[in-house]
Image (cartoon, rainbow, N blue to C red; front, top):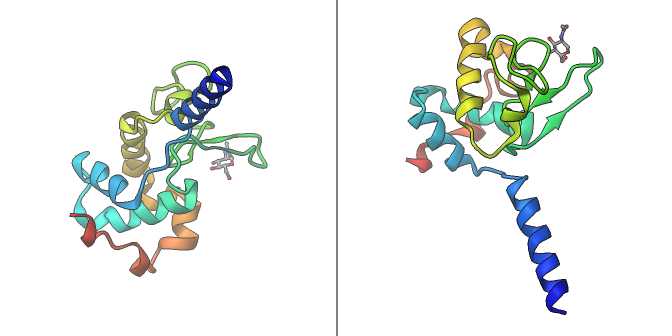
Length: 141
Ligand SMILES: *[C@@H]1O[C@H](CO)[C@@H](O)[C@H](O)[C@H]1NC(C)=O
């Protein structure tokens, strides 16, 4: 019985460590603290909800071209990160984009955003552009 409890507990710990789902407000505050302006937070919240359901550990794909998308922002490994080693334009290993620490995800999002704006994200174009009423974050601050 003790062994079973320990086993169940450790499995629960392992799966919680590998499936961090942020709340809208947690995510909005982290983005604000990372330097993103308040007026863009609804766009980021909407984008992350539709890309990853705010789950920092999601690997999406394969896409039709064989690439995969990594983490809360679903950053593509064709251009921005490399799987298993440091590389591409964010100069990072994609595996760093699926841990619970959003610091490197956000750093990479800044590089993507600087180059393409929100249009880099298909989910933003289809679900967020011009329709952000449901993603306001005023109650988070
Ligand atoms: C591969 O597909 C993904 C998802 O549609 C896209 O974001 C990416 O730009 C594509 N990569 C190339 C090299 O075409």
